[in-house]
Image 1 (spheres, helix red, strand yellow):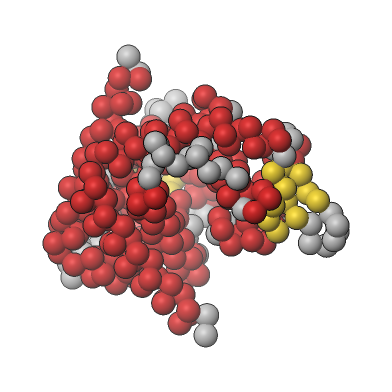
Image 2 (image 1 turned 45 degrees about the vertical axis):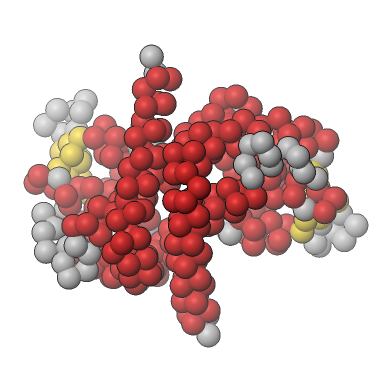
Length: 160
Length: 160
């Protein structure tokens, strides 16, 4: 029904196909990794993202707004998700300053990320790193960084 | 805190960096396109995905389960999202067979996708297609299809 609307001059067939393959690749990777994290470790992809960020921070500790920057989630999503993780004992809020509490990885949270990260990394290797091989992986890294830089430029211009 | 846990032998520094750049590229593209669809056309990325699928189907009509396959959303998410879009007049359910209603693009839905798709495609061109250029875009399409094929193989084996 949309012939001539989404196609030329905007995107030709090859461009459209490349874009859709890229989106599909990401979607399948994300879903496949998420399914296994949930099934094997009882972690959602959002849990995992928070745990990875905290586990890489000095002392396993970050401000909530830093987690928001790292995940690029909306503030309300960060807050709600941290509350759910706190109830499950994976993180705790450390309220030296009640207005701006730190978020701290608990022993249970550290155990959860240590238990799940190797299996997740092994899947990333098997389904992505080894399928592409080192040369194509390096090329993709450059492509990604070029696109990231372009979008960041746009975002800067828009926020002026 | 996780040195030696997520790193070798699972992923070395270059592999990790490439993976993270790829995920970040997708994330920024998705968010940037979504922000503009919402701001300029009042459409969420989920609305847009449903509208694109319907607009490309014969007669602007699909079964709900076909939309589920196309979007790879859970059945409940498809159902809830279609209810919200129906209330806004973008789609309607055509219940010749009440148990398996077709989902049909309305005139308003067609206008919404016709209005928004060209601007979205122009952004995909500007931030992705033109940044990569034709050779790298073709290489990325091949990479994507290789990864997709590998995951689909895994999914087949797991469902046996």
